[in-house]
Image (cartoon, helix red, strand yellow):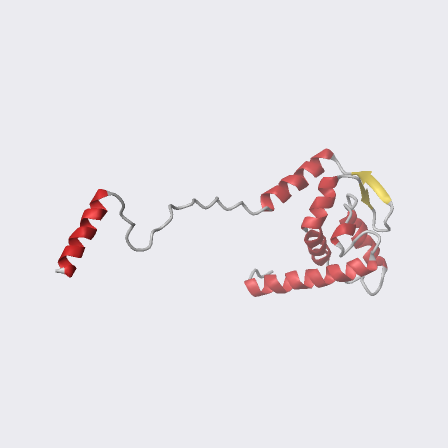
Length: 154
């Protein structure tokens, strides 16, 4: 198995395309709509592999591709939010499975928190810049003005 960047990219694209087909085939368990995503039952990979092996059209699906497609699905933020939200997991036919464990909820929330971009540091306000010279007031400026008047009026 080669690990070139181009091959990894092709495999990832193939896994995403395969996932799209799985979403069409199993609409009760998998969803492209982020609001409709539900946590999958433990053992979904084996159940999915077994179910696909029964169908002649899907029987030759490589296990790595099934695993990769599920990995793409379960690493999505919408899936992690559904997992962190708790509730029950679902089987491929959409029936309810075991509830999401506290450990799974915590792990999903930690993963989501780790993915959040760090907030940028607040910008410090620099003192206002003055264009040109500052206006002089008081006795010093008056004497300078008088000196200039004498110079040019004479």
